Length: 152
Image (cartoon, rainbow, N blue to C red; front, side, top):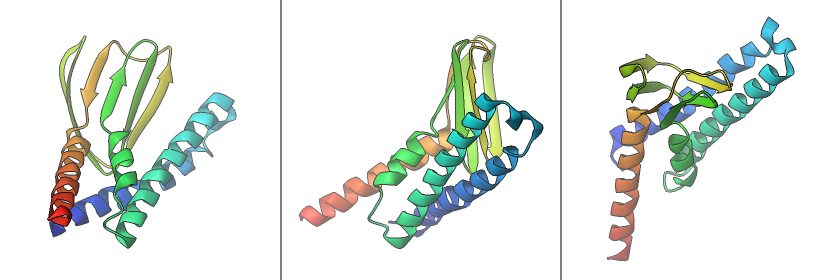
């Protein structure tokens, strides 16, 4: 694996996952945490960020163990907006262009973003986190190249 890709994956998963766990954990002690629904959603996102962190740590220990990286990048790709459910989870860095009922939109962020709304989200729209998507495609390419090299 190219060094730049390995280091970028480690930074996005270990660094982004750790930051997400810490920042999300702080929200448990906010006044909104008195609401059970809010608290459950915060715990879900803490677990998701913990999963991203663990997938990165496993990858650091053994760069051939990429299975969890596929999942941790995959859950960061979709950004869904609808009146029924809205969802976004990003870790580290994200670039999210999209088209929705409000027209074209672009979102560029350093850091973590997450939300989950039921029955009060923005109008319809689907967007993709291009940073997670591109990293996933590079990872797929690397795994295919590695399996081709092993079969020769």
